[in-house]
Length: 251
Image (cartoon, rainbow, N blue to C red; front, side):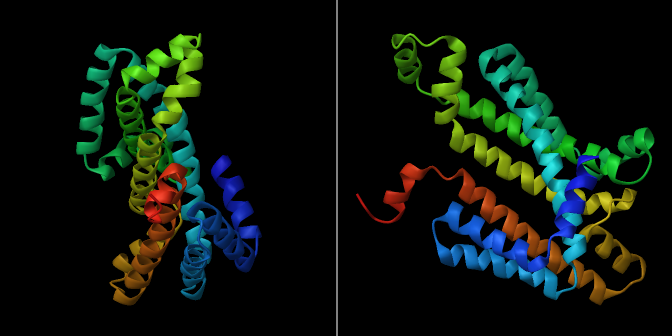
């Protein structure tokens, strides 16, 4: 199972090596060594709290769930932008999916797949798909008509125009959707501890069952640290490079 493979790889690597990898990734995405060091420090905070293994299990589940959500949500968003009637129906369904409390999805997942990682992944993917699909649809519908006309004037087919013009222009919206998907998946992974998913949510659940405020607080702090790292890195990945001169005051 992909989650098990990724979990094994993350746990096999030494914490200091993954910490350096996060620093390098933060430096690359954020174009700032301070940003990279801050991300690395937060990851090392998880190690100092004794939550490294739990954090890697949660990170593996989130990573696989978001990858699956992108593979499902991106085509749905493209179809919604291409076919207005389908898009109208799909947006209503996304609203319903995001309105239903997250833990409700655990019921059919547990009924179909039992307890453990598989139902947790199933429920997490369901929660993570709507943000990607919705923002892809919105981003493509926001592409200016002039840009589409220019692509046609260059002789691009509809498919090439989509891949070479429309999707790149919609990239900020798509990446914002992926960021929302990541955060939704992280929240669901915590709740999924109720059906046997291992990770940071399990630490909080055990603290709740034992009425151990200390363990619950440590688990909650670990979730916050991991959420900050994932959120900041995914936002940095989605920031268009052409905005950097404006952010630096170079006009």
